[in-house]
Length: 82
Image 1 (cartoon, rainbow, N blue to C red):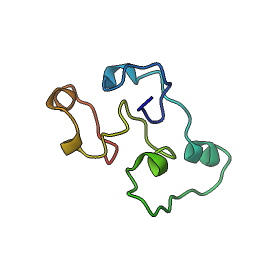
Image 2: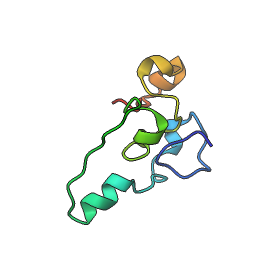
Image 3: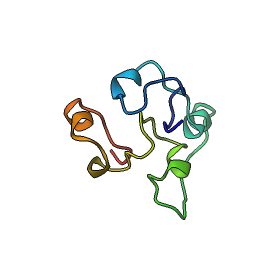
Image 4: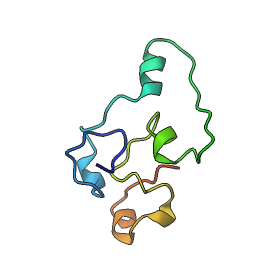
């Protein structure tokens, strides 16, 4: 589907569709339960697999602002690293 931490039927690449469609991440669930959390990864921390533990993004490829189209940046979309 190409999104992270949001319901699958949002419009990919349109960050205005993220608000209200976020999912609870694995880290958030653990923190709600009073657990300490952290992420250890052998891949980039912004890569889709580790990012799924904490990120909420309209596009899984938006690891850094340089990966985003100008329109998304101008619209105020955030990259996964932010």
